[in-house]
Image: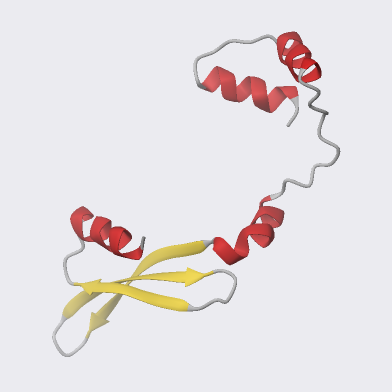
Length: 104
């Protein structure tokens, strides 16, 4: 990580630090500058695919009962297996929180 991103993150946290201070700190701790810009999102996903899950909701309108059902699911990025978490007519924050707890 170069000085720019470090300086930006520190500023976002409310700390103003000069680039020269960051440079001195990195050098004194023998932290080399980044060699390649290989930190792309796709590289991260490939490296961690075995441990990542994606979650989402979709709805289904039932023609017979004229109701809308909300379906929560997760997909394993590595195997692309889909797991059903729950179905409800009235999704609430408490319902979604409980699904997350059950998943964990």
